[in-house]
Length: 215
Image (cartoon, rainbow, N blue to C red; front, side):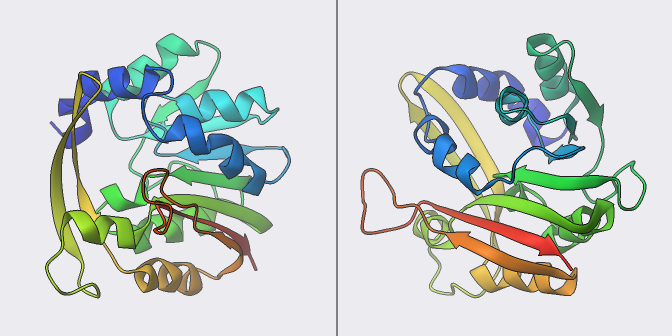
């Protein structure tokens, strides 16, 4: 069983409690970075589906994938008309040039090979299509797994209890250059970058948002 199936019940409760986590505060600003709806949008690593539902509410025709069967079941239950498919983000079951927009919200930190996932996103994007990424900022991740070597990729495992809900996060802390190099190698050109600050410590960024265009 993968980590997200093990944590599925915890994550569903965490993600669906209104106002509970940072998503509720930051989502409108993130969606300002997302292009207007086109013919087809892919949500890569959709989890329990809250980003899919918000994209659909903004007019996007969304196909969504995730590796967790339990989270996909929850997404389908909340959105019976949605198109949800189980897939590895590094091996997408789609043809080349199938989407004009790919969204990946706070997922790339969870996969062992982020570059492979970015390559797949580029493969399924049409020429001129966009990839919109949200990541926990590498600086914010460095605080929770500080080892004195920012440039090294480090596995992290963090248990958080907040507002009576508990969640275990597990993934990889990478330097910013790991993500920008992955975009570069995949033929994607960064056209927008944002570093929204942490609510509690506004002198530091909490997220890293990027919009990249398929050349």
